[in-house]
Every structure is written in structure tokens, then in C-alpha cells.
Length: 259
Ligand code: ADP
Ligand code: MG
Image (tube, rainbow, N blue to C red):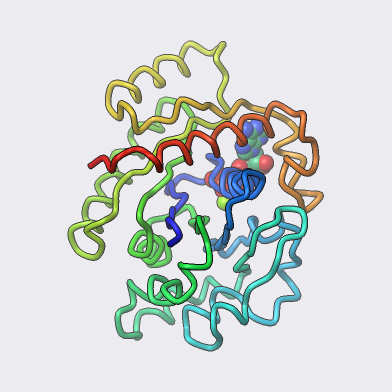
């Protein structure tokens, strides 16, 4: 039965999509079966997986609004080795379309139910907001993976996100917890990075991943070739970091459940 993780942070540009695509490919490299679900109208995870977002027959929007089944909308990412449920600008209409639907917060959870047993991991790339789409992702997930940059305002935003997660756990999904926080674009030479890092450790203890993702130009280049960094430059520091994150994540799964 797949573990479903939402990759979320309402801040844009913190490395959600980069983490989603590269974690998916790294989990595949360790022989896990992975489904990546793009839930951002920008469709960056779709493009970054080598799928053309402008020529889709169906996308995640059609799945959420009941126009097709999840399997009908699915693509295979050849470079990533995972299945992809793609997204494009159509998804901007979801907010309004979902309003009038029954169980509007649980559409995604229901869509995923029949395929959960086919995967080890389902990763959801969330949009940079706490919108109805993100609520759907959090209602469908077992855990939230939060990518964050170690900068001053990041901690403030984190409090909002943690509060939302708690609200959704109470209202919609008692199982939901913070799976882990991953430090992205990490620069160990910056004293601010180190300060913020210490605060994160103090506050989140073992929910902070030991693995840090360094700033690495190969990670930024790979999406324009429609491939994860593992395929683009396996030796790069970015590829090695995401492989390490995948094994840390898998190691944690074998530990007894934390609250
Ligand atoms: P989000 O999905 O949170 O908006 P992205 O994953 O799209 O963030 O990352 C924002 C930008 O930063 C992208 O251009 C991406 O290529 C780049 N980026 C992300 N992580 C790294 C990294 N570790 N090193 C260098 N560039 C990165
Ligand atoms: Mg993104």
C-alpha cells in the first residue's frame, strides 16, 4: 500500500517541484514503484518529467472533476521511471469547479484510493498556496514533506503551514502528520543558514531530515532537458543529495510510527 506524501510549502521557489521530481526518480532508483502527481497549474513537475503539458488529452483537472479516470490521465516518465499524473493551466479552474462538488476536499483522496496498492510511494507536488488544491493534497496524504530554504522569513511561513496541517488533521484526515522537513538550496557557509538550521533542529527534532540539498546548478538545469538530475548528471552533488534523501526517507519508514 503506497505511502502518500504531499510536498508542500505555500511559499513559491523553495524547491517543492525540484524535490518532488528528484525524490521520485531517486526512489525509483532504489526499486520503489512511484506515482508523481502534479497538482500545480504551472505544470513544472510535468515538464520536468519530460511530458509536454500543452498536448495533454487529460490532466489531473479532468480526474478531479470526474471527466476521466486516474489511469486514463496517466503518463510514464521515461527519464524518471515513474508514473506521472500531469497538470497544466486547466487546473486554475479547479478552485471554482470544486466549490460545487460533493466532498470537495476529498476528491483527490477518492481518486487515489483504487491505485494506492499499485505503488510504494505517491508524491504530490503542491501549488504555492494553501488553496483548495493543497487542501485536497493534505486530505489525501499520510504525511507532508516540507522543503524549505534556511532564511529568515521561512520560519514565519512554516508556522502558518504547520497550523494548516493541524486544522486539516482535525477536520479531514486524522492520520496526517509532518513526515519531514528538508533544507533546500543549502549553503553551509552562510551564518543565517546555520542559525535557522539550529532553530529547525530545536523545534522539529527528528522530523528534520539529516540530508541537506545543496545549491547545485545541475539541479536547476535538469528540468529544461525534461529529466531528473539523476539522468542528467548522476555524479552531481544534487543527484547524490536526492539519492541520500530517498534512502533516509525509506529508512524512516521502517521505524515505528512517530506522532
Ligand atoms: P517551487 O516548486 O517550490 O516553486 P522549484 O523546485 O521550482 O520551487 O525551485 C525554484 C527554482 O530554484 C527553480 O528554478 C529550480 O530549478 C531552482 N532550484 C531548486 N532547488 C535548487 C537547488 N538545490 N540548487 C539550485 N537550484 C535549485
Ligand atoms: Mg513548483
